Image (cartoon, rainbow, N blue to C red; front, side, top):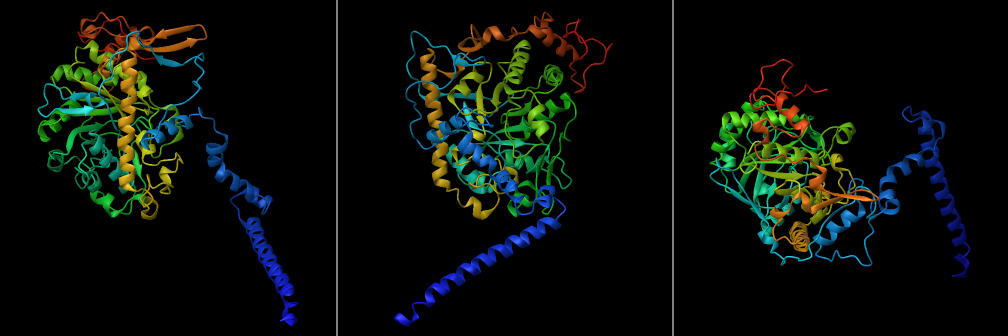
Length: 538
């Protein structure tokens, strides 16, 4: 036994030499490859060492998010916002000790004023709104907080299952997104808002045109409660959409009615109509084909006269949408050019206020309900948009956080690490449907409970009682203002009389046309309902 012991150190030295030889050989090959490659100048000038730059660049987002980012850095959602959703989805307490971390003396700080006589706490299940105007025969009682549009294809099958099962359990609505109604939307029977985009997925002909027969067949399903025409999306208005071919599966192709092997493109505009008059008639057609269900449209405000043109078409035809959803440029997307997400479209609050004011000024506000979407995750987010004109709110990324999204911002790569935004079967296996469905239900329920507590503190019993006078913004270190003081609010019928106090509204109203989305040219025949002193756009 003692005679073979000296061999052990020799063997150990051989193993070390072998490992060193392998490492140096691999590094030599890497260095040779770096010298010969023509793509990266850093690696060509600094072989081997230059790769360290790309290593750190690859993990920079994770290092920043988990180690460097403060609780209040919104990129695009802050750690505090995400933690709030996670805790409510897990049914954990979201209470915080010691006091606020928010600088209440910083310009832009917002709060809701409370009452010296708080109201009794209301049942959050009563926070609903009936959607359906005078021309609707199947109105829908919707929660004031619902799941915003996210398509199957952008999201995984398990993500759709979890969202819809949670919506069914909580009795709130799930917007399909423009990717049509998949088998996974139907599996658990949750209420659906069918979003109809410019690609007419689920009701299109072979050449991509609208197919009324296929639409009627799907729209009359009892699970479909409302139909929403997508005019534009907040994060990329006017851009259309694309689902890359590497994310298209056989199921997605069958659901959308598209061929395999090529990118699925949603055009930037609709082929079924091209003017405001044609648009409202299309709304009326969809309402008839659906059997009288609520039909409306979603858009991000762009040229103000275009929406006013739609409003003029409503007056001219007597046809009204049952609802309008105002999306904001702060809204989310699977993928969009940076210039669009940063510099195209009107933020949600300004768009919502403009739409609300226009309808009030035309005596149409009582006929049309307003929804709002764009970075809404908390009870205060809901209250703040209801206070300036919305009847209900939708959230997309909030519910994505509830089912496990960690804001890795890899939605467009098909490599979502949590199985939310991917078609990779192995990756989406990580998303356990019953567990995440319960989190969707919990997030909705706990958020509305928090809203009920805020309302009670303000002396209110229902979200519909929230007004602009309840919302306050700090303007400077020494001044705060009510939202009712900050913004112009038109009086009922003001646009019809021509006596408009807001010069901007008067000017946009004169530019608007029912027969075209183009503005009136200078010297065009005046509309008797438009003030005569309006100006051309700059």
